[in-house]
Image (cartoon, rainbow, N blue to C red):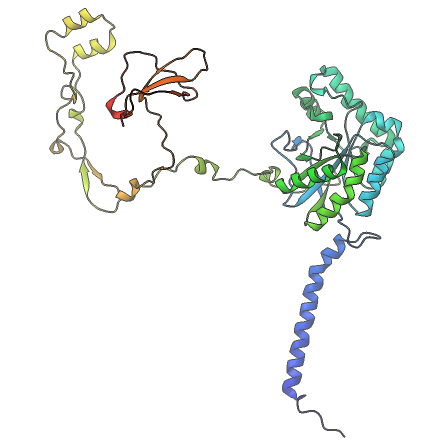
Length: 444
């Protein structure tokens, strides 16, 4: 019987068992971590497809207007999440090509259908539904003066677009309560009517300008650069344009390469509850709780570090005559009179006009003691970059014209004789009195 190698002793077997256990645990961890990735990339014929990362269920009435191109709120997306939307279809062959490109990457989008196009190409609308995309509406005839139309015409455009899209599908429930106004020409009449019908008004967060006569490379550039600038949001495209068909594969490839994820949006139903969200998630840049503090200085907290105190003034020494006003004082303060009548009133006892009006304060006639705050409380940094002179240190005479710059004679300047032009502070009134001279406080 052959001798067993010395290296395979009890200690070696223990190390082997521990290594095997660690290896199995590592494989299990990797398997759990890779499982979602495999599920997300499960796309027939394309294992590296972009795919659709999640489905977002929204209640149109809780957030009736979305898209930061026009509204404050947008969809509650996370960083690097994108919602693809297509307008103006269906139109063969371009709409069919868009559907094929999206299917090759297993990407879901939202299509805003024109009613007239749905009547002309009903099979195209049914292809959109068969591919699993969301179907919204985009009016009946795509008028570009939607914001200037009469209210009855606005209502007819919205209703007819929904009606003919539903007829093409054969099922009104297959039409999502999502509406995008043509040309994004929104208005109060339209928005109020959409709310009354339970429809959500969709704008966008950034367009690719593919309705303009530009190249496919420019469409790609606009889509990606504007997405990169915002980090997430709703992308506006048009499935009826050949340039969009040419740019779309490259857009999807770049989204995949840069770590973006596609989100599919559907409306909530009794059988499909809305996705739980927080109110601040519906803002592209949520307002922070410290916005006010960033704009306005916080009042300092006084920290009293010593027992030293300052005397408080006596109440009786805060007025003119020992804490009491004479009858003559009330007459001077309350009754308008000319200079002669005022002089007669003051003949009996001249009124003291030189400051201070009251006698010197004495600490012996009161029991008030105020603590001394720490000196560091008042050690606030001074702004040194660019001195702003908002004091009235010059005589400003209006020049010809309402908005013309003013001529200034700066009495506080060493070159007092130099006349220079200077624009007044917005909202300020020019000082035009020829005899006004600057106070010594503002002289520099």
